[in-house]
Image 1 (cartoon, rainbow, N blue to C red):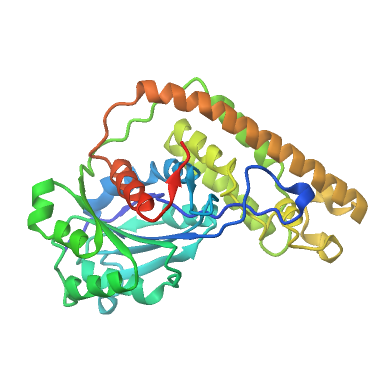
Image 2: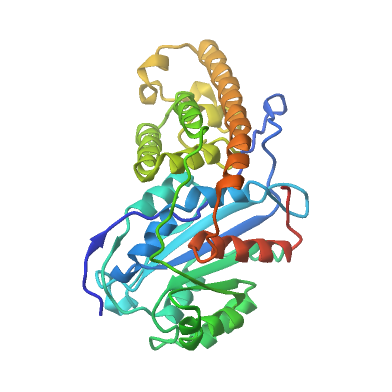
Length: 379
């Protein structure tokens, strides 16, 4: 049993669906209808020994989001992506449930995923890999479409065969359902083999990786970070909260920006790039997205839920304002992407090898397995 309590933040993978603008006159070249889905269940050991893993994970989320922006399915369109999160091996959780908790079911809301992951805390417990995989298989709404990609990533550092539920039988079930189970051992590569993490990946049809979870992430500052961060500030001003969730979700957007900034400017810059893509979709609470996607009639909007700056506008004035905000948003997003091209070129010249880090393990597995399913990368 691990006993040390440590409250920390973690952001990983996360989940994202591309924006779909239903009205032809508002269609953006950066958006497309999704034909295929990618589902990822992330199973994290949140015992105190995993503090380093969590620190790496929180620095990796937005880079992975941005990487997926270049994935195209067989229809040559960007697939939607859903992320689910489980924590296991935490003694604060119920022993009857195997010290396992579903933190988030499949979601495409980037801010929600970030919020849930940033709220995780660590504490010692027993780590049952077979049981947490079985729980994710049972509880999550997995796609039954064979063309969709379904991943499980499980990370930890205790023997893979702990617990009463056999990981071997669980992985037989996962393969029958078309899931790919990837294992990430936090520690020495050979030790991971000896403690059956490699065997778990083989049986799950996935890839085994070992990472140095104590490795400190070095963020490279670029001359373009501050430019992107300022554009992100302007981007946020184009969002108009509405309905019961509007104000709270708008605040969540700001909070997740702050969480990223607290880590480093480079992380907020990566998040801003994610927000400039079609994967950052908020029609549930943002009136501009809802209008663009034809998800709401302006005559039905509760004016009392709107910000004071637009609350008194009549319907024609409000619609014109939304069109202006939509145009401004797309202009800013385009500028962020253009600046990021320069930023990426700069980073490509400065980056050092990080093959034993979490980011590399995730990207290597995803790129290989995405390609095997008639998906491709456009960069």
